[in-house]
Image (tube, rainbow, N blue to C red):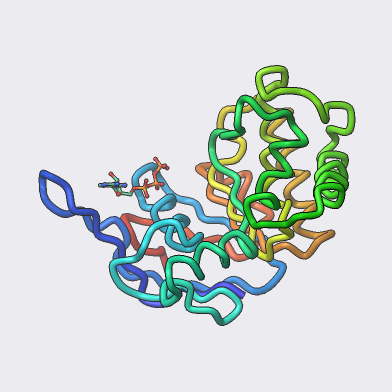
Length: 222
Ligand SMILES: Nc1ncnc2c1ncn2[C@@H]1O[C@H](COP(=O)(O)OP(=O)(O)OP(=O)(O)O)[C@@H](O)[C@H]1O
């Protein structure tokens, strides 16, 4: 489902170049729950951004269901991302002026889906799936950080992506919310067959994943 071949990322800075990713090959089968672990600075976010079509590799390929995503034109890549990949980041990044259901609906609006009724029905269903059926009208500022994270997960699923990328999705949450968010992600992975790639510092969170990739200074540990 997901394959990386010879991936490299070099950042050019005022102080010279940084080789953040130094030749990575990996495979994740369809419907799997995979984890990417490693110390701060080992390159996890850089790798995820290339896999998610957000940051162009210096060399190598990312194949999602056989599509070499970095060989696509910018507009084709944007369309591919919007249709096939969902993102949950460290901070929820909801739009503060939109309520929960409008935030969840946004990816479908951006993808050009026109039937507003269908969009709102789908967004309501997703909010119910993440346990927020009573908060459709709440603004992000009226929700706890765990609830905001749930809205972000529902939003990531709006366009029914095949691949869900989650970068430290529970990092600033208390233990109970962390457990609940992880249970939710794993349930979505199992029930919908969405392939999940989770970046985490936590070996405990990665324990249920298969495969687990360990990043070490821009490469994968054998
Ligand atoms: N835009 C950038 N410009 C220059 N260097 C960068 C940039 N982004 C990341 N780096 C460097 O690349 C390396 C990998 O960073 P990255 O953020 O991918 O690591 P990480 O494993 O995700 O870390 P963390 O767990 O702290 O988020 C680090 O040395 C970092 O300083």
